[in-house]
Image (cartoon, rainbow, N blue to C red):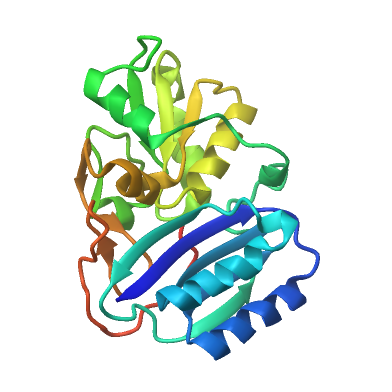
Length: 255
């Protein structure tokens, strides 16, 4: 059984070369495969390996104070979903092109999966306001599945979100808007941006869809969750839609 992890963490990185060596050493020694993104604003990992190899890497990272609070989303597969291991240097964990956003300096308010599950069951938040689920992913991704009655936007790239959201802002002003995405990166950036531009009624789903699946299952969600590897998508029980090696895909950040 292969352990798969999705991890992102916003923290300033001034030693990306040293971190790259750390990851490459672990991969070479323990057979890890997947993608590591290192950016000035933080890290994004989507890796797979034996349980022991994954645990050893996480122990090494968490020994550093800046990574002690890493939040990890786990899933499992019978086959290795990556062809190789690689480290990439990028300017952002997920490209948004709003340099004024500083996720490492403060987050937007969030809602925990268990609380969101309760809100979806009762049809409102704890203050009695309607809840609108806002999908910050692109069309290819939400075609595999999304929360029931979610607001989806006709975007192909995350940078298109502000323009696509503009026609809906007035209609959303009296609701509690829950921004969500695959693993938390995009919905975190989107929620900060929305707060900065006057939408103070927005929460981010803590841990994204994968965190929701892991903690409470798939209640209120229709379909599967697209992921950026050879598993194609994960079901609400976190089993892969495709659990066999297939033609390699381009690997990009998972948010």
